[in-house]
Length: 564
Image 1 (cartoon, rainbow, N blue to C red):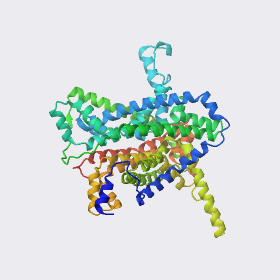
Image 2: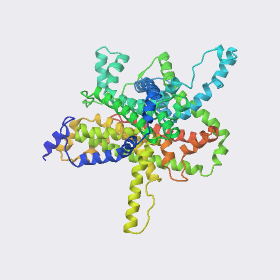
Image 3: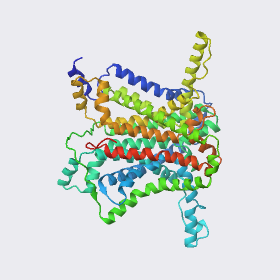
Image 4: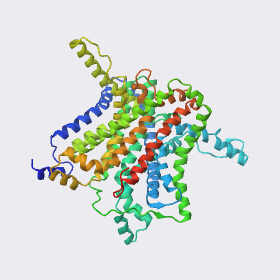
């Protein structure tokens, strides 16, 4: 094949005839291996369920679906409002505390949602500090004397999840705002577009792909959420999965509900992509200028500071402060636990391994989709990312089936050929945990990298191919330097979420293997969060440095800035 034809194929439109080259086979292999646990869950769903599905349809399934949809709609609205407005304000304006808030707005990403739910309930319920202060200040004696919103409700769950998940939208939309061409805003100003109209009619449409990916990630995390909705007594599909599995003892029924969650997630992805199927968002200007950062008047500056500080205070400072108080008071109890240091080391090394593997696989998968320009290959990649919508416990069961088959086959071959038993090589090992994390969080890696690649014009790839660079060299020398901020974003997202992942860790961990998440769970399940506050605080603190580096990488990812 000539270089000219290779370049033309590299820039051919999506949906062209599928080319069975090495990258296509490699992409399908990666997608197949990642999607194998999901296939295992689907096979389990078609197993005998003793009529549990018809019972669910006639009783609680409508309630599960209704609450899930309302929860998703509320969280989508909350994350869009908080994420996009704060990202635009800290990117384009100067106001008191801007430099600190620009990275502090990512801090709630490190807080497990169930920790925030516990702290919010502890502080806002009738016996909490806030309502006690209100009763003392106004002389109220009972709940009938005043109205206060019920925290353990659907609205409370929406508020908590929005505060924890809005950083997905914030970091991706801020990265998009930082990389936008300032020339467009200059043209808008000459046409009479003020700051608000420039945001609504120029910046927001250009950042739509990044915002959409952030919302989809937040919604997938919402669909997977179990601890918060259970604590707030909101029956959703995820809560129903655990109820059917643990209380009704029906793994097939739980897998059927899990498949429904996957369908909802793929539906969200399809709707988002269909809405922008014929739209492209490439920046073709070579003119690079620093963003203006307009100074705000005193009144507006104070309002911007308060608005940007609110999610940081409510989503990070409040739970971190309460945990710090508990940790100081009960630190001897936590430190006296045998192996507390090893729990922390286990958490960090597993998170590093999962982040590195997920980022590398995400780059290869997204680049393979870009090269193929085939709807079939993109569909396979999209299906491989659906693990984010499957509850961690159900995904762990799906992963145990192929791992168990592999271990049994290798042990049988070793006995027959070498006369030596191998035992379990992967099941119940650290490798199984890393594999589970990669499958669970592949959506974070693939979608973040895929969004970064969408901003690279096909002409750059075609130019590299005409100069004799093959696909791998083009990836390493052209694409990777342009999307390194997206790759770092993906790795840090996986790192932070791996530290917080609990159900999958509980099932796939080796015997006598503890992490900070399982350590906190053992005490929190017995309503002794105060005594495990040090471990919970360590999980939160572990995400502080990565989000700081993430904020710096976004700021310097604009052309003209140096690398981090």
